[in-house]
Each structure stands twice: as C-alpha cells, then as structure tokens.
Amino acid sequence: MAPDPEGFLKDLMPTRDDWRLLVGGVGSANAGWLTGMVNKYLKWEDADLAGALAGYVGYKLSPRLKGSLGEAAKSFFLGSLFSNIGLAAKKRFPQVEFKITEAAGMPEQPSPPPPAAPPAPATIEELAALEAQISTAKYFGK
Amino acid sequence: MSVALPTGVLKVPLTISETHPAVVLADSVANVDSEVATIRVPRKCAWAFREGDQLYLILKTAAAATITAGTIKVLIADANKVMKVEVVGPTPTANFATLDDQTKIFRLGAGFDRKEDQYIIIVYKGADVSDKTKTALKLTGISFTEL
Image 1 (tube, rainbow over the protein chains, first blue to last red):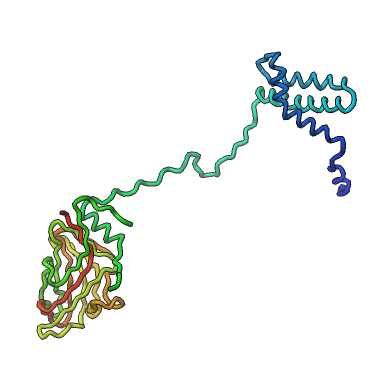
Image 2 (image 1 turned 90 degrees about the horizontal axis):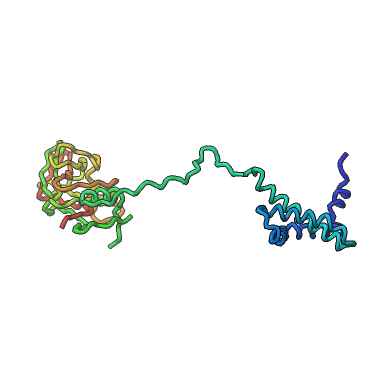
C-alpha cells in the first residue's frame, strides 16, 4: 500500500523540538574548540580522544541542569561527542578512498608534448623548396 | 606562414623573360617535342615557382605568324638533364597567349623549385615551326640569392 503523501510530507515538517539538532550541530562544529580546551589540561597525545571523553562527560552530566538549558547542553555535548568519536576513529581505521578512475585507454600521465617543429630552412635551396610548397602567387592589381 | 631569412640571403620577385640571361631559346622542329626555351638557374641562386605563378609564351613562325596549334609542356630537370619531370602537362599553345588579362593568364597549378644549374624546360610540339628570334616569354616566381 502506497504511503499517504500528505502524511509523508507532514513527517518532514520541522517541529519545535528540532532546535536540539541546531544546538547539536553547533556542538559538532565546535568539537575542535572543546577538544582544545580540554586537552589544554589533559595533554593527551590523541587530542580527539580527550575531546570525545569531554563530550561524553558533558553528555552524561547535562541532565543535572534542569529545563531547556540542560537539553541544550546535552545536544551540544552529544554533537561534540559524535564529531570527536569520528575524528578519533578516523585515525585508527583504514579509510575508504574514493578515487575517480581514468577512462579505459586513457593514460594517467599527461599527454606527450607535441612533436618539435621542423628546423627552419637555412640554405637557399631549402628556402626555395619551402616557398614553392607553402606560398601561392598573389595578384595585387595594377 | 613567414620564414625568417638567414643572414646573407636575398629574396626577390623573379620575372623571367625571353631576354633573361638564364634563358636559351631554340627553334622548334615540326611535330617533334622541341625544347623551345631552356632556363638554367644561375649560380648562388634557388628559384621557387609557386602555385599561381604566371607562364606566358608566344611562339611565332619565321613569317611572324603566331602559332596557335600544338601543345606546350613544362619540364624540370637536374643539372645533367638526366631526370626530367613534367610540371605542366601537354597544354594547348593558345592557353599561354595571354599576358595581362588576370582572368585568362596561365597559372601554374602547383609549386616547384629549382636550385643552381638545374633546368626548367619548355617543350613545344606542333606542325608549325617556331622561330626563336620571335619567341616571347614571361615566367614569374621568387628568387633566393646568396650574397
């Protein structure tokens, strides 16, 4: 049975609770800031791991703040936590590299330089031969 | 396309007439390929004849009657006249009779060149006998000279 298009669109409409996503986005965008601030004291070799730890602690402690402030802190630290987990994990696991492959038959190296121009004629014989081949007689009127 | 000339080479337009020192004229023999004009490229020179260059030739009998029958062809030859190559095939004599009407003058169909001591030979074949003293010629081209 096909989904009701109206219900489908209705689900996509933003709601008032979606502000958490924005705050989470701000937290994600500032993951580096949180990492830098925390690692200033922890001085871990893997700063992202320290950032992830700080995000986790903040996420866990945020319910202690009541009301919207707690919700905002929770979203912020959750965003930072996800980003830092991603950054820390990126260093430890091989990444899939997307590479645009060359079309079949196309060489990867740049095309070879064009052939060098033939040497300029130096003798009168060569000049005459070239003149006879490349020039046409023109009539300029009387 | 322009080509820079080396130092000491002069490039000038060339007009070869029947009085040009490189030209040797001869009478023709009836119904035989006759070399009525033999042009030998001077020393220190190379000549280029381009597509579109003009060839004008008037042959007359001893009685000063202009020859209109027969054919003319142009050959190029090496300095020993061992190898001859036709650069203008047998063409009616009347085709070469126009001097200044740009719509009727005979023009070379393709370019060729000759270096010093090589030959350009104009051959006539026809029933009439031409008199070399009454031959008129004009062949245009470009001359390269070593100074």
